[in-house]
Length: 183
Image (cartoon, one colour):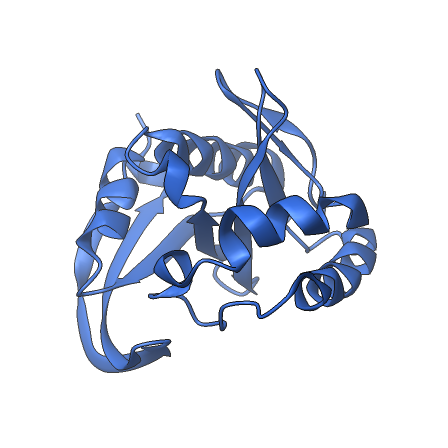
């Protein structure tokens, strides 16, 4: 694994970049305070912007680590901060990056998250040297699975009662792409 860390990635519509503390207000307003966005996530809805600021204060120093991958999703045409995509777990022993993501409800259904996920997977395979990129979603959140499908991941199966999110204990649907899947 090449410990390159979080670097800027540009797509047709997005700039994926490191978070800065000045992102707190937009992050809070656009997704962290929205219970619909956090419904299937593993962290609670933020009760105020100070919670968001505290999270950023935890995240930002980690950019010094070469194995920390956490991007802010910014619309290129407006500069609006609309979401987050990150590697939530690295398994160096098998070259795996496990992904997590969330985005402002105002931008759901616009194919922005598959665009971001595809770009991040390309970076993880081509620059970092990963062999496997995986992600899971709650069986009751099939739209998240569609993101994974559109990004070219393959559905692997369901692990019953294997995870926990804001809904409680859940069945997890696993998806992945491995290096040899790429065309």
